[in-house]
Image 1: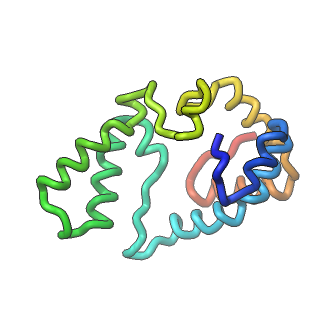
Image 2 (image 1 turned 30 degrees about the vertical axis):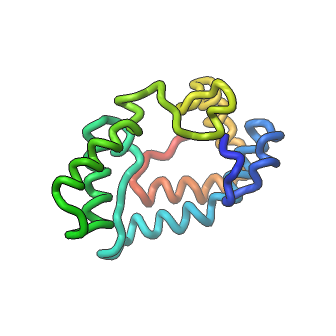
Length: 152
């Protein structure tokens, strides 16, 4: 969906099918994922660790994550009133509170919504299992390292 992604060749991805696109994405993203996993597994005091699942599963998790983010990046820099105003303002971006809202500018060009289509997600899950074996194994090692279950 994101045409302007510097992490990988967006225009090329748009013309590839699910299997080819997933394989290309996996190749480009592995170094990024390895770096992120290292930071997450071995953080220092200057590292803020937020889990996607905790931010997206519930509105309470979203609010808690935003609060942690504010406290990490703005310690003693904003007033309690400013912090509360920010927490209130960002609630509009919580997909659990506002499932129909979509703030991706590229999606406004068509009828695509924020979340992925379930059938598309299923195709992507199947395509992951078809990427080159050693590459898949490296991703599964990252899953285990971070405490996620590894699929078939």
